[in-house]
Image (tube, rainbow, N blue to C red; front, side, top):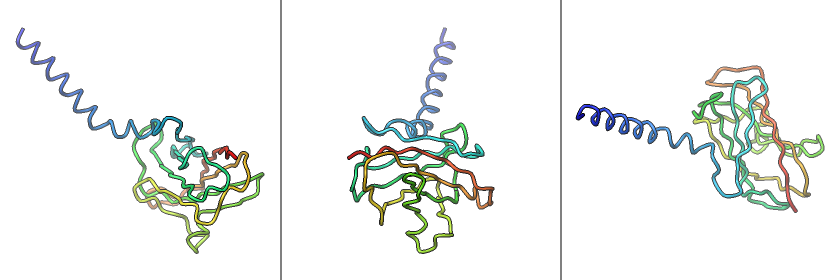
Length: 160
């Protein structure tokens, strides 16, 4: 009887320990506010899962403080993929209206997410009209290894 109680106690304790270490990763992909759900897509070559979180959400016309948090995860997991080379582009009616690397002064050099997460401030672009915009995130390298570019695409509704 005492042995079964001890075994039960150890089982519960081990579950709590596993849960406590995995909770930050499990919460990462969950809602971060009542109306805010990260947009999720897989790259065209299935190398990464990509989360895109606009802030503030929902995005409205002429907001100057819009930012995009981009998170790269290993496929089918909640673990961040470190060292990802990428860009972020915004299209309105198939016309490119923003490219993140243009803000760096080196438009041909990809951005690098060292820890698998990066926030892109919209320094020089405001959404001028409501409607649907396409956001494209091309990925050029993972763990310092170049890859054939893979793309994650998202649709963003901008409100008036």
